[in-house]
Length: 128
Image 1 (cartoon, rainbow, N blue to C red):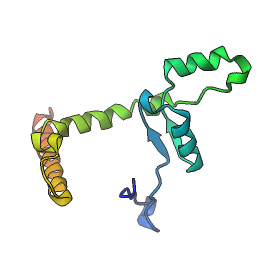
Image 2 (cartoon, rainbow, N blue to C red):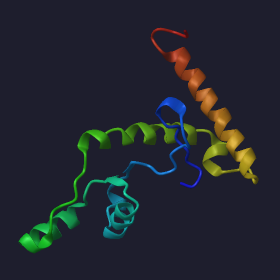
Image 3 (spheres, rainbow, N blue to C red):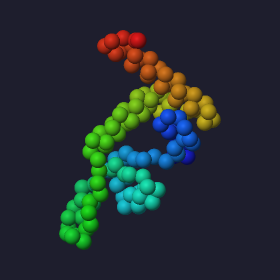
């Protein structure tokens, strides 16, 4: 996450380095992960696992309030997942064949450009 930089609206000021929301699947629904994100003032959009929900209910009022999960925002996670899976169709990206990080980044960039060009030609309106 250290490499993430998001421009501020209007382009004025230093870029943001901290995310406002983190989208994750149920595997990351641990108390430790949620506490870490809470300390950094990042909203976790992670659904609760069934066993954790059962434990909350079993403890009754002592079980605490179940963590919130914005269902509408969570659906955006699939867009990122599909994007990553499209890149993994390229063998060199999936196997991390390149030894140097800048060569691997170039391979990912080329794969992304190929995907973008392919999606442009497959669109019903065509390029432009």
